[in-house]
Length: 475
Ligand code: FAD
Ligand code: SF4
Ligand code: SF4
Figure 1 (spheres, rainbow, N blue to C red):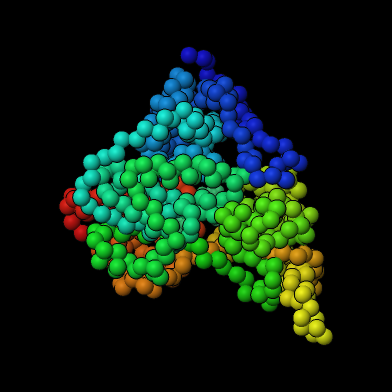
Figure 2: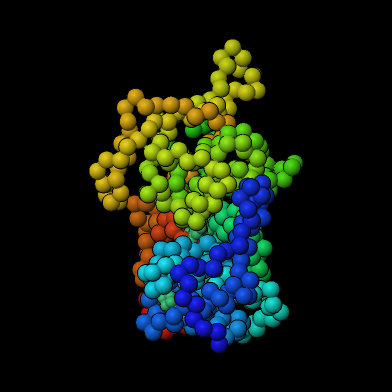
């Protein structure tokens, strides 16, 4: 075996140059070659106490899978990962590794941590390229479970149960399965083909995916039980957008980030003749500083915007988006207007001519400069407006990316389902809700969080549902 690699830096990730990628929707990061993966794996010290594993929400046995890469046994590495994670090609791409597994890696003390996420992506892509698609379908165990929502929590729960012989049906409100992985995260960060492969694998396992079914409207949770399902998992996410409640949010050209990204991702607004109206060209302001804001800003650029601003009320230090995404956005030319808060959206109004076709469209966003005061409840310094510092950014489109909440539809149509004051479904450590037989997990419980945490919740609930339906655990 080759010698340990004590270089302080990670093997760089090959990527499309910024000036090229800013005009296309192809994936930005291209992934490691076999040589780069082997070289990076040799940076791992195979620590006995495995600090990296405790940083992973699903406790992937990291040194073990990296050990397999060192031996050139990439399929063996895949088998190790897939014992803990059902979406490695997704998590290897979008997990916030820098605050999870890689944050605890000992190599990070005197240089960069081992590129665990990059290695995970390499292994998953290698498997997907070489996989013959043979899946052994387990014997049915006679039990039926319904899953609401096809995001990472729902897909993971469905997959784990199907592997145990459950007849699982996933109900999805949209016309495509995958949740935020398909309607939110853009193609240039997570190609949709990867998510499609995951949903196809589930279908081969026998999972039925019924799209265009809204639980709470088309069918209720109670009707699912009446139909013969013995347990229900709710993984309906947190897709209800928040707005600032400032004047002008009703003007044409103001979108929530969810709507903006869905139109681009699922309704193909990037085509030359799209079937859905969305901005083309012009100037765009995206309000917010998280991953969603970065995705919306970079999508706007690829849709042809001339100028794109990120408007964020705190400083770069508090910006919650992943560093890598912020760097990518900057390299592509997104302009960061930090310590800036919108106060009003301006629009074109022509009182002389109500039929003027420009009436009601966004023309700008009035903002005020901010300074940081004392820390607030979150521990971050509170932004305070600077008196008299108002100014206007001339823009044609405004995208609000200031967070989302769980939709109350399921709660309002399900008797006895307890939610907290933020609308999150209340569950115990097994994912069981206040209704017997009804489990929940992912963003529907926690509010907007991460793919890996949603996946972990789906796994926990699948285990608990199995224990409940086979009588291994009394409720
Ligand atoms: P979701 O993925 O939201 O899926 C819920 C599904 O349920 C949806 O398909 C929805 O249509 C469906 N649904 C809702 N209500 C109903 C109903 N009544 N009936 C039937 N179906 C219903 N996380 C990361 O880890 N890394 C990132 O880089 C990252 N980037 C992100 C970028 C964007 C733009 C967004 C929006 C989120 C991002 N996240 C990221 C967060 C992450 O995607 C979510 O935390 C995760 O997808 C939550 O999974 P979930 O299964 O709980 O819900
Ligand atoms: Fe790290 Fe995420 Fe992979 Fe866990 S799933 S090892 S946190 S990249
Ligand atoms: Fe390898 Fe880092 Fe984990 Fe140690 S902490 S086993 S070096 S990945």
